[in-house]
Image (cartoon, rainbow, N blue to C red; front, side):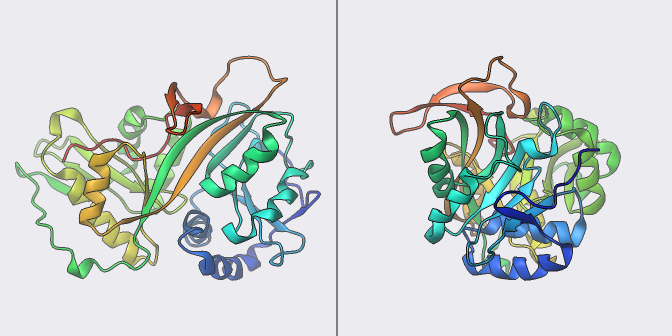
Length: 325
């Protein structure tokens, strides 16, 4: 097993006893901090997946926090080749500590950066432009920072005598098989999610799994999918409302990551009162000297235009797939 480093050049490993205080501190920066805030909360409460959290050696005066791994599956399955980062948007100058971190992060190798606030990603791009190229996936974070589902009236009717129930471990295989980024997530992730978090499916009268949605190990509601033969029955809104209430009742802040072009999902969550908070980016950072075409955790790629004249590569990721309501 890879050794867990107690510190880097600019960061130190967090003791678990510190996590509740860090969660409280990050709460001061909601909604910008929602993904990292909820990752920590899910880790403390449910321990779905193993993370190692690092803060600056001058925390919180220089408020930058990291967690490794940032994704659950990378080409070499190394602890320190993927990470996630948060820094208050008013303190982005402190990301210089990330640029000079040469113990925890090897900038000479590909880096897999999990969904990160777009402002933070822009700051990283400033110094990484001299190191290599970046492949990106954009998403919009929509959430309910102050949920009030009492005012949300949506009739929930499952057609054809179907039923909705908590998923079981045996359902993980079909969910993983149809997950758009199954190159990135191993089946064990879905098995653990089903075991420890609200993960619900709509089942047909014949017992077939027709649609599903799960709460992630980083707190988000994700992987909403409906099998083609069961679409246009409203299963998406049924699952979204049910999971939103469960996530809220368990003390989490419901949020989703939606691709900017996915109007169907935006409309669905708007009905539940979700609002856009910020843009987020998942990225693969490749140094100029790196050779080979291995895409690792990024999945299939499609060259797209990002709307501002720059060509980037979009990676299949765990953003909401288009849902036929």
